[in-house]
Image 1 (cartoon, rainbow, N blue to C red):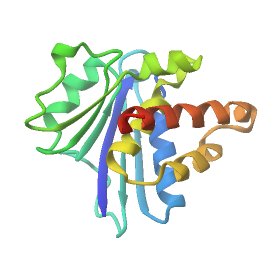
Image 2 (image 1 turned 120 degrees about the vertical axis):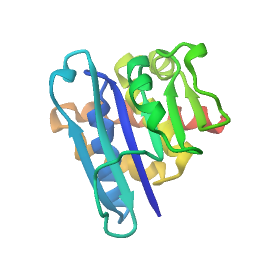
Image 3 (image 1 turned 45 degrees about the vertical axis):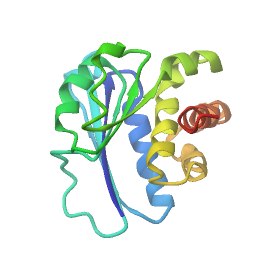
Image 4 (image 1 turned 135 degrees about the horizontal axis):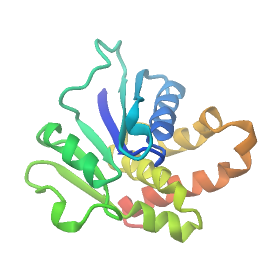
Length: 182
């Protein structure tokens, strides 16, 4: 098993957090993992991204030129990374922030549409759109079990915010349920 992904969005959308969470979930599931956050001027409103590689064998390189999958939280990130997605790759797309006419053709890639912001708003916290998107990604790819991702939440959320663990888990489940049609 080998799966790589680029997670991208505006700075402040929590793309680093869910990348870190996916990496911890991979480790907790017994996989080899690399996680590379991209910090810089993008963090304050521009596009921010990170890469995660999960494999059951040692990982040769953490650098991803043509990703197998993407989690895209906004339009500028779609423009930047979608052309690099391999044919047949999985694109989890936050359709709350990307207009329908910009969605790539499903003939080239598997597009998983998830209105992450709208679902997070329904849950009462729009800042959890990232968790909704990650839940959708996990359901779409089955790269790790959702239960392992939920159990990994304390690894990335500081003790000061542990009271938010149940809401984050709920957001993960809501994203997964959206993909499963539940």
